[in-house]
Each structure stands twice: as structure tokens, then as C-alpha cells.
Length: 113
Length: 116
Figure 1 (cartoon, rainbow over the protein chains, first blue to last red):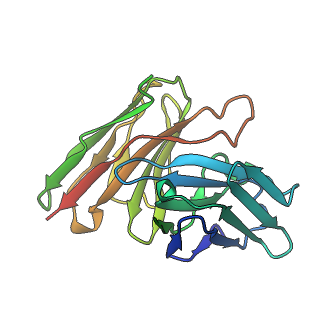
Figure 2: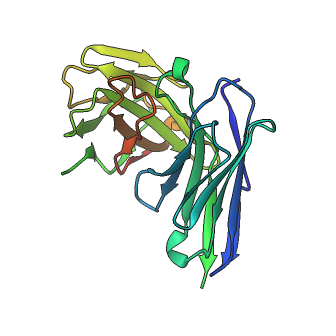
Figure 3: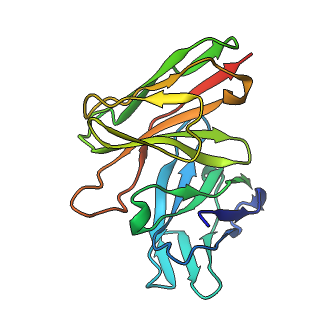
């Protein structure tokens, strides 16, 4: 099943709070899980990515948590800032599927100052 | 470095008209993709190409055609436009050579198309 389910559809967080976006998948062959960030009027850009051999990856205020047994992964944005307001997409791919990413539906994040 | 450039940025078509969305990249990437983005639906792959002269269908290819005569250019052709093709179209490229299949996608800024 080439599908990735993302929630919530939209999220409002106060400045300084933690933003959490969740994704789930069915195909256990998936072995690469990136998150893309998209600002209005722009194309998505890679934010952070993880492979299933680790349970967590952190880059600055952004952390991916990965639960292989539950087939779930999530993005945590610590100390959320108004500049983080954007649409976030999770995605997945596997070697036999080449570099063709399957994207989640997206989460619109708004950080209130 | 321009990256991935898409033209036009906006276009309104009447039902039944045709048009070509242009995409060019200056990063010498082998892999190129066309996605469409609809609200609440994420990005759906329309067509992709692994190199000049090689193209293949993605998830939602119906109503579209592509060609890849050069490494740089990957135009998307809409024939007989329909309201269901109203969307934002994104072109992307990646350097997935040497077995590095999980190279990041580099996206253009999109073409917003309305079919009425």
C-alpha cells in the first residue's frame, strides 16, 4: 500500500510551544522518511529526514521520532516561532520505488505570536 | 544558481484548450518529476523521468503528456483541459545517481492553473 496518512490537517500553536505532526504508513518496505516544508507561494523544500535504523533524529529545533513497530513517525518543532508557519508534508519511499516519494496530505501550521 | 524554474506562474484556461507548462533545471540532475498539489490531498506524482529520452507515468497521468529531450528541460503538456485539472503544478529534480536514491527533491515555485 503506497500511502502515508498525516494528521492533523491544521495546527495552531502559541509562540514558544511545541508543534507535533504525525504520520503513519502501511508498507513495511518504506525505508526513507523525509519531511518537507512549504511556505506560501513556494515549492516544498527538504527539512529533515530519517532512516528506520534510528529512532530519532534532531536538527536544531526540529526532531523526527520514528516508531518502526507502530509504523509511525512524527515531526516535533520545539520553541515554535512565527517563522515556522508553513505547510509540512511527511513522505516515504523505498529502494524498489526509486526516488518517487509518496507524500502525506500536509499539515498547515500557524504559530501565533 | 537558479535551481528549478517553472513558467508561467499563473494561467487560466478554458475547457478544451491545451497548454504546456515549462520546467528547466540548471543543476544537471538526471531525475525530474511533475507533481500536482490540491488542498488537503498532498502532492501527487503525474510523470517522472530518469534521464533524457526516458519518461514514465506516476500516480495520476491521465490528461497529461511529457517529453524529455534534454537533461535540463521537462515540459508538461495538458491536452483538452478539464476543470479537474485545476491545481498547482510543481516540477522537481534530484540527483539520484550513483545509487543515492534518497537524494532530496528540489522544487520549483509552481504554476497555478485554473480551468473554467
